[in-house]
Image (cartoon, rainbow, N blue to C red; front, top):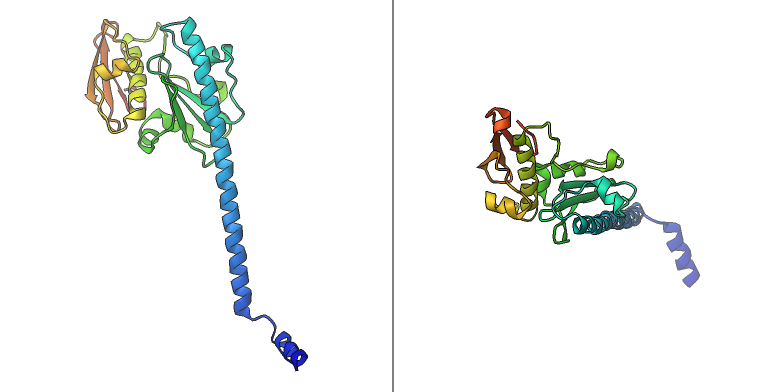
Length: 237
C-alpha cells in the first residue's frame, strides 16, 4: 500500500507553481549575493581612498614643519614620501597649513568622495558640496586623473593680476569652511581662519556668502580697477 502511494506521488511530478517558487527563491538569493559583493567591493575601494588621504596628510605635515607658511602641491607631497594608489583620484583644494583640504575618490563607479582637513579628520563630502563646488570633479568615473590630480585653485603666477590671486585664495578658504559647514555663511573672518591672508593691494568683497550662491569679488590696482568674481564652482568672471 505504501509503495503504491509513493508511485502515485511521483507520477504527479513538480507543478509549474512549485518551479516558479523555486526559481524566485534562487533569483532573490543571487540578487542578495551580488549586492553584498558590490557593497564589499565599494567599501574596499573607499578604504583605499581614505588611506591615500592619510598618507597625503602625513606628507603635508612633514612639509609644513619644514616650510611654515608654505603651500603644498602633489609634487611637493611626493618629495615627502607620498605615492598615490592606482586608480585613486586626488585633489588639493586648499594648500595652506591652516585651511588644508585634500579630497580623494577611487575611480570605480559608486565609490564616494572623502576629504581630510587641517586637523586630520577624514569625512565624506556632502552632496551640496559635490553639486556646487569644484570638489564635485572627483565624482567623475574613469582612469586616474593625469598629472597627479586636481590642482589647488590658487596660483603664484606673478604675471596674473593680484585680484585673481586673491579670489583663488579666498575661494580655497571658502571650500575649507563649507566642507564642514555646508549650510553656513562665510565672512572675511571665517576665511582667515581657513587659510586666507588678505593682500593689502587687493580689495575682496563677499556678494553672496552661501554655498549655493557663492560670489566673491576682487579688485586691485594692477588690474586698473577691473573687478573679477568667482562663483561656487570656481569659475572666474
